Amino acid sequence: MRSTAYTDPYLQWVPVAHADGCAADGWEVRTLERTGMPPGWDTRITVQVALRAVCRTCGTSYELAADTGWIDEETGGPEGPIIDVTTRATYGHLTRPRRVREYWLHAHGERLHRDPGSGYLGYYLTRSRRAPTTPDEVLGLVWSHINRAGNTKFAAATAAVSEAGRTLYAARRAERTWDSPTGAARWIATALVDGADDHPAAGS
Ligand SMILES: [Zn+2]
Image 1 (spheres, rainbow, N blue to C red):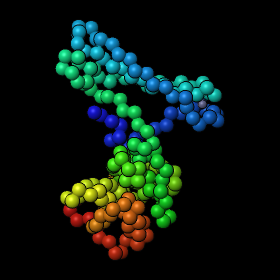
Image 2 (cartoon, helix red, strand yellow):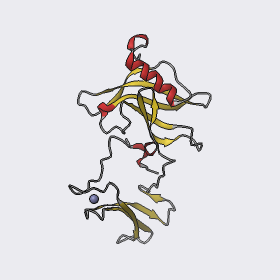
Image 3 (spheres, rainbow, N blue to C red):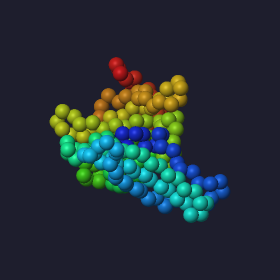
Image 4 (spheres, protein in one colour):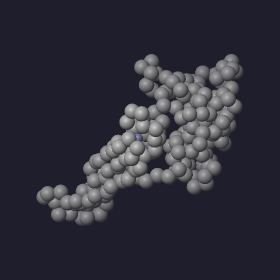
């Protein structure tokens, strides 16, 4: 199953723009799902989906439509992308940023466990409370992994931007991990202020 969870929720998505001068900031959003049978097939059902955002203040109607694959009644399973409906609880970029010292921690990716407090796949540390929209706004990276004992741990690194200015990478990695993303973020906050007592990443 494909999912938009694996895109960067801050840096790869662009906002749908209202017409110039429109004071509204929201959209009335509806989705459409339509099935059909392509010519020459008698077991395949195609699936089309669309999303429409309408602003009744400025009259803008934004529509995005795609063929998203098919369902094969003979082989059983669906083929191709399947639409994934998400909620605030599921993905990190829909949660509020967390204050860590003078910085802000923005979650991204899927929630790790059912428990709402269990953390998300990754985090960006920024100076602004506002979510980052360009790589140079990201000062630090926190990412989760499962250790050999089966426990969730969080790793940390200061962030750097590629020379082309488009790609983020880990500049200086912490040599230990933490049980919480905020613990990892505090290491980054210290590393940003005082780089003297940590060490450049060895190897990768
Ligand atoms: Zn509008």
